[in-house]
Amino acid sequence: MTKIIVVTSGKGGVGKTTTSASFAAGLAMRGHKTVVIDFDVGLRNLDLIMGCERRVVFDFVNVINGEANLKQALIRDKRIENLYILAASQTRDKDALNREGVERTLDKLSEDFDYIICDSPAGIETGALMAMYYADEALVVTNPEVSSVRDSDRVLGMLSSKTKRAIEGVTPIKEHLVVTRYAPSRVGKGEMLSLEDVGDILAIPLLGVVPESETVLNASNSGMPVVLENNADAGGAYIDMVARFLGEDRPMRFIEATKKGFFNRLMGR
Amino acid sequence: MTLTVLEIRETDCDSIARLVDEQLARAPGFFSRMPVLLSLPAGLPDLKRVTEILKAADLSVVGVLDAGKAAAEAAREAGLGLMSSPGRNAKMPEDKTPEDKPAEKKPERNEQPARAAGDTDSSAKSPTRLVTKPVRSGQQIYARGGDLVIATSVSEGAEVLADGHIHVYGALRGRALAGASGDTEARIFCRRFEPDLVAIAGCYKVAEAMDEGVLSKTVQVRLDNDNLMIELQE
Image (cartoon, each protein chain N blue to C red):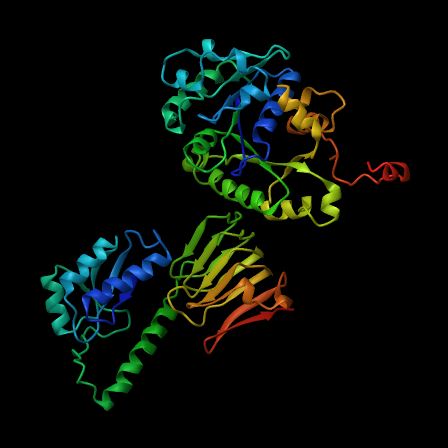
């Protein structure tokens, strides 16, 4: 049974695309046939993060409009078996998405794939609504700061009222919290909300915590999902997250500030 | 079934239109397509125009409440129904013109609302609304004609309203407005008090004006002679 998972947040720049890319790559690495779709029509980014920007011929909007079939538009990842990307169109806007077209595409993908990851655009308008409408589960990506948490809260309200599952009154979308750019040392200084604060406000189960890390930026710039970076803290966080999603029990990492040793302090590290 | 009564105190149609606009601007979309009964003042406004004004404001007028003779006549001409409030005699009260205010009639008028209130109590099947999911930012929940019980939390930027009391068993971080149609006896009870705003029967207090000592505490909010009291509950 195919699962459709939306990665959403409300606010922009919190790490939706990074999470979509790494989560999809992580699932594929575990042997699940996975496709990740960029719903951010007009501001397409996922292809860059996945490093396949020079291989995009047809995109999601072409498929919706019947100008190309799925086989033509799906881009196979060169590094990971079982991983496919469906890019957004850069020249169109969100109005190019319509419910029937999206449903048709998702139905077709469901015949072949185990997981369909929908990378939502920021905001609460058409694009975001289309990305979440047919979802079975949702990863709500939040930074530990008040505006991001409030926007995520708004999105959670939409997940439980504006989506197909909500409207038809069947089992609601399963919601997972993903906290990104978490810096325990700054939480200690009161510059950031703590995990407890975020969890208290949003009241959904925590799937993973991704630490603030330079490797994320570097990986993004080089078109590599951070989950593929060996020894990277953020990469490890995504590997844990996928494992938890698949039902494994893994303790949360990166939630305590590392004690600075005397030497590190001396060196200003 | 509950119906909203729009009490009109003005007779000048322009000021009615202005007041309606002001009221609706406070809660855009909230009254959309709501059926209302009119309660009319003694010197009747032009009913046809009033109906048009309200129609333009997306309200639908279904009838006139406790209409006197003149009002009943005007209602018939405007194509509106007539209704009497529960507990009232079938006999309509006499039409009252502004100069017609004899002192001896006052007790009778005072008595009627009291009786009406008593009747409502005895037939109190006020539909208490229970909410078990978190109320998220941007959501609005209104318990019309009854109490609202929220088993979880109300997020910042969410709004909960009730004509009766409001109970929040989690944290209240958004807005809570009890006694939304004017019941000054309504109260707000809350396990963890961190609201943006609380109001009872239109008397409100914003977070900034609240005493720090009540924040994050278990409190009760009630109205005491137009003073909004926020009291710690042990």
